[in-house]
Amino acid sequence: MKFSVFQISRKGGREKNEDRMGYCYTRESGLFVLADGMGGHPEGEVAAQLALQTISALYQKEARPIVGDVTEFLATSLTAAHHQIIRYASEKGMLDTPRTTLVAAVVQAGSATWVHCGDSRLYVVRDGELLTRTRDHSYLEQQSAGVIRMDRINRNILFTCLGSPTKPVFDVTGPIVLQQGDKILLCSDGLWGSINDVDIVRHLSTQSVSDAVPDLVELALRNGGDHSDNVTVIAFEWETPDSFESTRGISTDSISDGVFASTIQAGVLDTSMEDLDDEAIERSIAEINEAIRRSAARKT
Image (cartoon, rainbow, N blue to C red):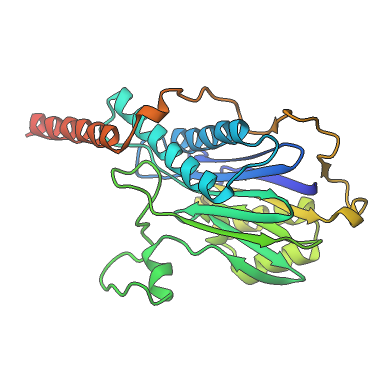
């Protein structure tokens, strides 16, 4: 397995960067993850980091050297990340829960499968054209797809994320068989909110990922101006075995069984996470809501 990859994250005009991204791989499998901590709620960067650490830890446990059932893994690991955020908020006695979007892709056996929740996106570009991209879990995107028709609302608002009191809504897509030269880009809304899809595809089609990604990020920051959002991108180009010398990318062929490489900051995964079932989550949320009620009562 060989791929070229490039990642970058910029704070933009925000006080802090709440985006997180990274990738990890074994000899025969790769995981690419990006999370955008949500403003308007506390510690969005913590939610994003917890999401990455949880999924990475579960991937390391599962990929030996491949993930057995990728669809199940992505759904289970996203839910586990949501649970970890809820647990964190409950243990800290927080009046509101940290929240984050998430998009993650697993590549193995020459195919890609991905999951997303919220409005962080994944693009697949092939032969200069947009093959597919994720559809945001926002009222604006769903209305444009003819799914929801609502008036007098903020149509840009998300209706799901990780860390909220309700169960996250997510979509799993794939597997899609990859071809030589396919490029997959994961990004936060700081990128696509300032650059249209046509320009994103054009940059990916005419440049290597190591050139396209920084150019796209700089363009998004310029377009966003002084109040630019955090802009985070990770993109990779797939290579087939007969074209291994086309780029100076990462080759996993020499990796031994049981070896796991990662750019994601290590974290301690709560080994009691399996005990946090839906009932336990509801208790945690109830405790948070009760703390909010008591706080409001004191103010009045």
